[in-house]
Image (tube, rainbow, N blue to C red):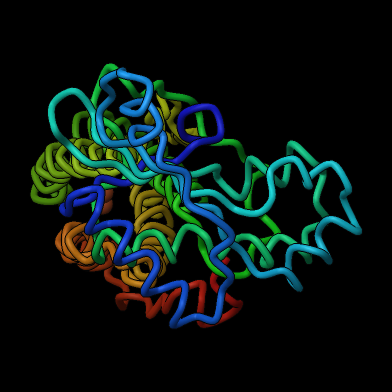
Length: 308
Ligand SMILES: [Fe+2]
Ligand SMILES: [Fe+2]
């Protein structure tokens, strides 16, 4: 969970413009604007200088009430708040309590999370689609993704995406290790060609790991350091089968990831993953060809079950 339960979105607009955009969106969505607290304005009245900082308090009384009935202590965090503020460098941020943090803090039942979970996508719209989502160092503190968070969420959240990308990263590490070792130990004239290809795969997998960890960092989460387990065998065919099975799994996962990035408006990230996906499909073809098999049609997970 980013920043002790807070999410920070970079806004390309001034504080005043950002607030205008938020208020217009609230109105369009039929949400109630309860109040706006001008912290910097109040500071000025008492002769103190403060960077522009305003708090907008808003919500949906019906949706919020149902959550408060189920989890009474959330009343201290409701209505929802958006903090719009300018930092020392003149950069504008929209900060808010992450819905997953509020869920854990107040033990909100999973089926009611949706009543407050729209906050993130609403504020992302305020700052424009694909807005950067994390504070630069040193504001940001990295934490491992919380595997419990947003499991009940029907739509993918940024935290959940970061968590899934961390699983992808573990698979990339697994692939690097697998290809490094297999490319060296595969013996026999019939495997010379594929051994060279595996050495090339190893380098490409390292590039994938770098790209994926950059995306995880961008989402404000610490990239994992743990590979998925690597199987070994004395049998060349078996080694290649392990590789092919992993590539099939990887292709399935990245197909889902592209859709999930797009659902979150992260189009640049989707593009990066598409590039990786193309190479993974080449890996599949290389391995299937070496094994004398057809390239399996693996589809994607989301064709079998809803995107989580
Ligand atoms: Fe890869
Ligand atoms: Fe691969």
